[in-house]
Length: 143
Image (cartoon, rainbow, N blue to C red):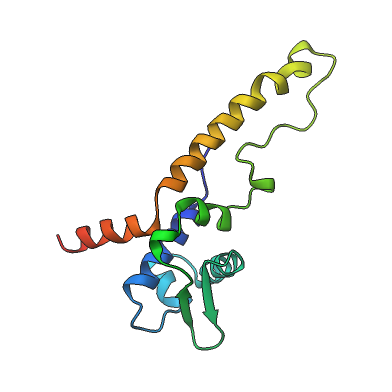
């Protein structure tokens, strides 16, 4: 299992927006820092805007974070950019064979376990904020 790079790119984008807040922030600038195509950045910007985490000024290339970084968790960012149906981390195969004793019972066996794993991951993501990233980044930049 692997979370897509959209999540880490979005975190990187927030770091750029905050670090370079005194200059015009564009998708081209962020794409150059991340090493990706500006079209991907624009898609992520749309998702972050839809989640209410940023505001984007049309035409001017201005991006503003809507609340203090300490109030935006990794879970907020994850939910904004990861395209998981109903925020479910695990997608269960659709049609287990009801005639098979394993297929008939696999949901009963796995559902609670998978929900527990997802809840644990969400709790960990919720415990880390973009403020933590800013603090750590400042330490690394000053080395």
